[in-house]
Length: 150
Image: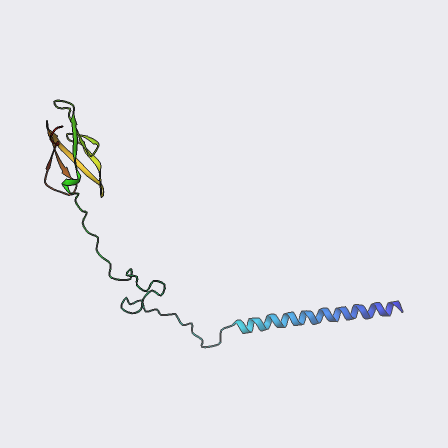
């Protein structure tokens, strides 16, 4: 009697295993069939109109960044008013000019801080009460004089 129960249990489990395998195989076959593109199906590409005249940025509707690009302007030459000759030291051929707290000798080029940023200054000559300089980007030479009383 035990043999008969054992045989029927193993048969039952075998049938269930076969049924489970058949269901899995049919689901896999169905997935392959459903994932295939139908015959004559063409993938369409999205087309976006990026014309600056049409539309605006929905997050920043008043933004002007989509407007026409402005060409970069030529560098602004620092006004001579922002450069000050603070002092002259040394004697003879070894004089130093102190321009906006930056020491410069004749023939040297230095970066000088001004109110609007920095400017490159070339010192041509250091005289007794003045210094002859040129500012980068400007062709003409300028003479900076000491204040009266220094």
